[in-house]
Image (cartoon, rainbow, N blue to C red; front, side):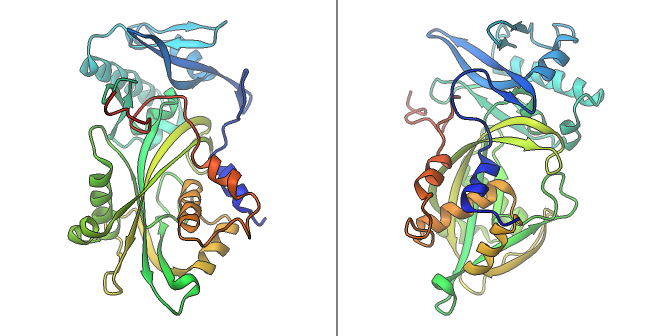
Amino acid sequence: MTKSNLDLVNDTDGFPYGDGPITINGQGLFTLLWRDADGDYPIGYVLDRVVDAFARLPASLTGNMHADRAARTLRMFQDLDGEPARTAAVAALTRHLREQDAFPLLRGWRDEPWPVHGRRGGELLFSVERAAAGLLGVVRYGVHLTAYVEDAAAPHGLRLWVPRRAATKSTFPGMLDNTVAGGLTTGEDPFECVVREADEEASLPEAVVRAGAAPAGLITYMYVTDGPNNGEAGFVYPEVEWAYDLRLPPDVVPRPKDGEVDEFYLCDVDTVRRDLAAGEYKTNCAVVMLDFFIRRGILTAEEEPQLAEIQRRMRRELPFPGPHWKNWHGA
C-alpha cells in the first residue's frame, strides 16, 4: 500500500484527539498525576493492564500507589523525599517487572536513565529506564539529525545520507532512518547528544558536527506502539524530538560504527520520497524527513493540500511538562 504524507504522520501521531475517555487497543488509560504547591498536573498515561499489574505488587514497590478508578487517576512515588529516592524506587519497580518478564517491552532493557520532568523550570522528578518509560506513559526526548550533500545535478540540488537500521535492532529492525538519531539520557543536552550519537552511529567527526549542525526546531507527537516494531502494542509514548540539519562536504562520509546501522546510502529526494511512500522508514523518522522537506521548500502546499494538517500534527501540544514548554527553563 502506498502511504500518503498524512498517513506517515498518522503512523507517528496515533493517539486520539478530543476530550472524554480514551481507549487504546481496548485498554483504558489512567492519568498519572503529580502534585506541587499549585495543585495536581499530569505527567503520563498508564494503561489499565499496567495499573492492574502494579496493584498486585506490594506498596513498597509501587511507591504507595493510589489508583482512583472512578476518576481514572493514578499517584505513585509522590511521598518519597527527593529525586534520588524516587529514581531508586522507580528502578526497583521496573527491575522487578523485568525479572518477572511481566511486559515484553522490558526485554529491550538498555540501562539508560531517561528523565521525567516536573512543571517547574529545570525540575527533574525522577528518572526511568528507557525500556520502561512506556509503562508510565511519560514524555520521551530525542534528537534527529539530517545530513545532506549539495549536488546541483540532483533533484532539488541535494542528496541525503540515509542509514538502514541493523537487522538486530530491538525496535524497527532493518528500516530506514534519519542520518543520526538517539534518546536523551537524564541531564544530557540535546546538542551534546547529537555530537555523541553522530560519532557512535555514523563516525562523523566531532569538529564537523559542532561546526555545522544547525538546530531546526522541535517535533512533538504522541505515538502508540504497534507491537511488531517495538516489542509490545498499545503503549503511549508522548515524544519530543530536537531536529538538526547538517550540510556535509562530499569527502565526509558517514560509516557504521556501533552496530546500530548496517549501511548508509546517499539518496536523492525522489528516492527518499519513494521509500517514504513505501513505508520503508521508521515511523518518527518519516515525520522528521517530511519536516526537512517542508523547511527546504521541497514539500509545498501546492502539491500537498493537507500540508497545514501535517504541520499541526507534527507540532502537537503535549499535556505533560518539560523542556518543550515555552519558558520552562526560566519558570
